[in-house]
Length: 184
Image (tube, rainbow, N blue to C red; front, side, top):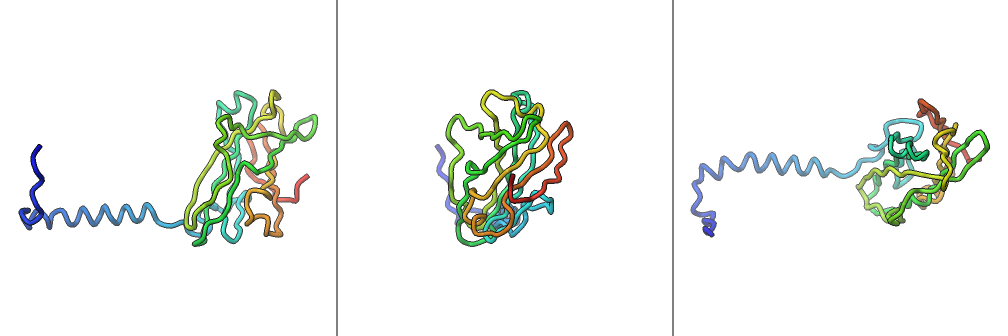
């Protein structure tokens, strides 16, 4: 194995030629790791909510495999604009659907126990898609509305006086115009 020559033996022209690409890569790396800015996960849609140290966007997620099982999927996008961490537990979201027979509670599909409470560091963001099912019932086939109660997902939400239930119409072509309310 050949030894690496010491830096003092490098041709100064070669070092100068490396300086620009190295600076460009450093800048690119810093830009890619830029801290989360307040509301940058929020696209201005009606499923978006902003709390003091938590921005949260909820939307239906369409996945052929999930729907083949008669389940539903919800996409959560979240960010923490503060310097300090905040708590987040997407598994604590209460999700239910309305079918022709009434309201049906659904549970997250989590066979490996991966959905659990955690801390979201200041300046960080993330995205999760969670599939929900109602045991053996095929709720995804005939539902008309999906509601997501977020009151328990974070202390940020619990401190808010804003409505904490997000409902949106679901059908063959889901209307992504949710309505925030107190729940039903």
